[in-house]
Amino acid sequence: MVPALQRRVAHRYVKTPAELAALVKRVAREPELAVDTEAASFHRFIDRIYLIQLSTRHETAVIDPLTVGDVSALGAVLADPAIEVVFHDADYDLRILDRDCGVRAHRVFDTRVAAHLLGEPAVGLAALLEKYVGVRLDKKYQRADWSRRPLPREMLDYAALDTQYLLPLRDRLRADLVAKGRLAWAEEEFQRLEGVRWTPPPANGDAAFRLKGARALSRRTLAVLQQLWHWRDGVAAELDRASFRVLSNEALVAVADAAPRDLEALKGIRGISERLLDQRGTAILDAIQRGLAVPERDLPRFPRGERHVKDPAFEHRVDRLKAVRNASAARLGLEPGVLCPKGTLEAVARAHPTSASGLGEIPELRRWQVEVLGEEFLRALQDQPSPR
Image (cartoon, rainbow, N blue to C red):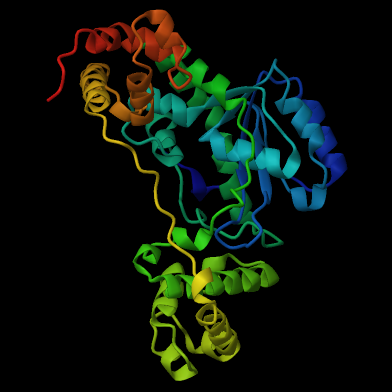
């Protein structure tokens, strides 16, 4: 076991365009690169990439986009089909690299996906590195503020560790995928990741309704909650601070529910500190009054979920497919949801295919899932007894 954080991690801190150009020139000849990012959504209202970590088999670099500026040269390397780009849990990194830098990877290997397909019970990076590489990661900076500058050396070391051992981990997982005959499964999943892009949250609807407890509010207090939500977002944007650090979600709903009319009543609500009361109490009361002043005809309604007509035959098909899926998952040593998630089972039941070609036309169903489950799925859907 290597106690990784008990020694200084060897890495380059890349903070100028010239240093990035030199790094890109070196890594462009490598067959594999390990990549990770650090953002600060836990601390900042405007989330963005604050560090990009990159490792080859010979060196590790921590790139600072705040001082480097344009990192599009790195994007050209990651998009090179001759280079395999290794991530752990690639989906989020790929989305924010696309959003902030216009950077997209062409050939992806995701160690988290590989671990899922190998039936690993714990697929976090720390657990996998400890099991496969013998490196124990400290989680001290898991929720650190990566937007702060200057970054202490200890934080840079911590960031570098996220990619420094990722290529050896990739090697071990890939070998196990080959041994179990599941490399093709993983490669199909990796290929799908190449198309991941940043998508902004939908503009329609009100995010305030998604808060826990909002469903229990009346239409009037929902209007108050909307006004409080907009007030909080305005303050968070002004301070560039995560919204919940201005006022927690729980306190926001509690204030909306109580709709206090004065500072003394507001003070009695859990989550309202003396400091917040002094600095923002009047503004909070103003937001409450705006919600209380919304005309009756304009009061919001809590969005109703889509109602589905009960279809016993469809549900029966889903049950039969689930039984096949669960038995296969147990035989293969996989979590049922990894082998075939519920949404895919429902897509198959809805399409109700009668042939292998019909299975192949279901977009949610992977080719490897058709190979593993296809015949049994078709048998389960044939000559099924009518449900009562």
